[in-house]
Image 1 (cartoon, rainbow, N blue to C red):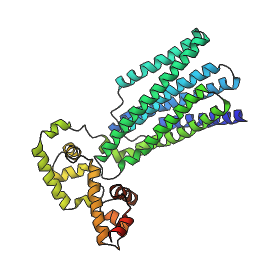
Image 2 (image 1 turned 180 degrees about the horizontal axis):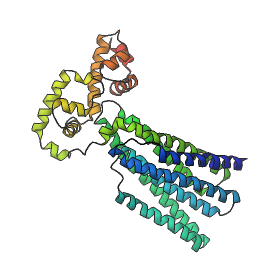
Image 3 (image 1 turned 180 degrees about the vertical axis):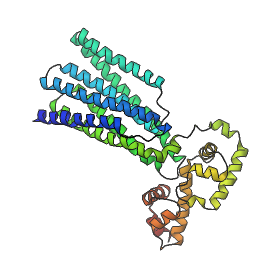
Image 4 (image 1 turned 30 degrees about the horizontal axis):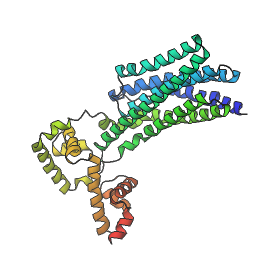
Length: 364
């Protein structure tokens, strides 16, 4: 029963899904944009990877159904898991940091992985069973090291992406790529499952692993293809040039004072209540540089542009809640500049620890 389910899911389910999305990655249209160059490369690489993994699925099933070469099957599982860990980590980072992937970095990353994979098969075919078993556990520790390092690498780049979004938009634009965050940890969970599967191979374990893998491939593939249509919303922020170093800015307090005077006048005019304000737009209104203005908020105000403008909006919302008891929360949210009621409520709770409705009652 379990073997039949495994066959249906591993071959006819996951295998068909891999081949299908692999072809989609190759042929689904990508908008023309220089900033999407690495994404185009990633799509082609992932297309080849999906087609390859689909083929490996078939080969792995052949070994499984014959119930032979269990050590080799375990090693193949680790080889595929290492390859996937690298591919998905670098692909997902590319989506939030378009400058991350370079040829030198990829080569430096691939050399130790390729050496371990090549050595694994040499040891399997040329050495004793005891030697192979020892190397297998060494490979396991190397794979675990990769998972830890890739996790730290991804989180650092994702935090950088969120910082970029919060320093450019007044809305929660970083949530547009929230699926990237979930995809990484789904891939990590699949990777850990692969680790356990390699250690404790069983029909039920293989079945559960195949189900988890198919769910992950489906979720990632849909988001990956959709990325091209989402990119134009965040392109201006994600392609922003590197900001000036903080040390250079701190030596120019006169320029900071000039910016602060303009910012205070902008606040007095309550222009922060306009919807979809960006730092680019504010910089143009203040006749200053976008990068310099961003550094002003980060260094002088010690907060991001979005945090700063949201504090102003919440203070304005408090006044409206108190002065206009007949005005709905939605009306107030839009009036102070929020385009989304749920985002307004989140920000209000974040700053006051209570909802707008509760705050209104307590302020009466």
